[in-house]
Image (cartoon, rainbow, N blue to C red):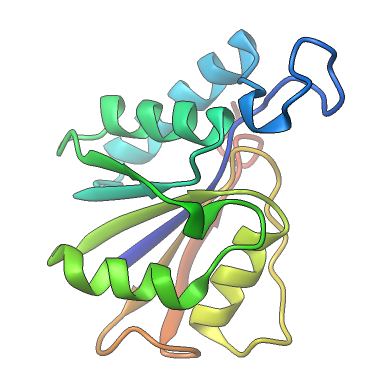
Length: 162
């Protein structure tokens, strides 16, 4: 099984007066365009989630929509508070198990995505840095649990030359 973990793409700045409710803050058009190229490049290299779970915040939902649109399986998106700031690892594990899919994608916020990735490959005291638009692939050969995975790859737009 693969669990892909994605930090949302480039959004407008925190505190932008257009979005007094931060959960409504959107992706910048240039950020969405850049992330589309990231996803297209990764899809050419095998990035193919079958289901997506996303924070309900606008910027994560928009990021999940880009993933769904530009990957081969055109996966359904589930919005969940388990990926809102302060993510719930146990709820995500349960959703992933219940999905019945071999490849799922979690779309969330920093620093949570770094803690979630670290929890899958090590323990609760670790952290992996996720720049905006980063995607990581964690491979699990058995049960989904703390430390059961292997960090298979982690990439940024910059590392892809985008």
